[in-house]
Length: 259
Image 1: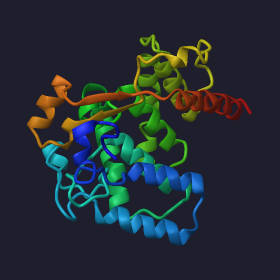
Image 2 (image 1 turned 30 degrees about the horizontal axis):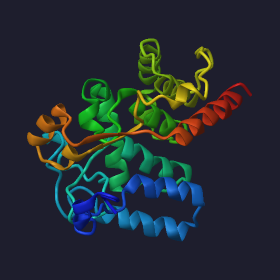
Image 3 (image 1 turned 90 degrees about the vertical axis):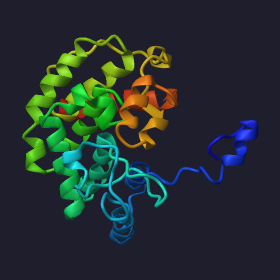
């Protein structure tokens, strides 16, 4: 249900229900630990909704609008949605299970490389990742992928990503953002980055959303950019249990790096 407990808006629950999204499916598969047959079936399902199969994206940079990359939504009635964090999560599943790259995998990785080389994750983070929005969160996702992938063009950007993460870490006062950046640096193999201890109480604060629901992400350009800037239909999501999982991840990563 899209609008639980919303009175008259419940009439739209079925017609406007969101389809499954691709990176939740990918992360779910990492938890389940599937056999090759289920992975191949899932990848075939992902490919059906890729950019250019049923339709092309109308809400991304023109020079990349025909790249056959993965789309966020696994629904034929939804617009093609391209998000760097989503692509990172999909390719993380691919890297962990050492699946061979198809054309869409390669295109998705190449788009990640192009966006990071052009610093779009820093200058246009809300546009290239409308569901996560913040530069630090994008860096966290890409760093996690780098820890598992052997895709050389992406790994060549590691030093740049480390410098950017350190710079952002020195500027932020948000506990969750500090934690994300430190986890990213640990994923990238950095040992010498100090982090003031983040307490559980600090992670209760609702000042830095990890995930954002942005209704404007469904729009085509230039409406997408305009309404996104107005923050109309934008909802920040916070999860204390998830924040605690990041704290536990930090503990595990510290132990791994210091071995």
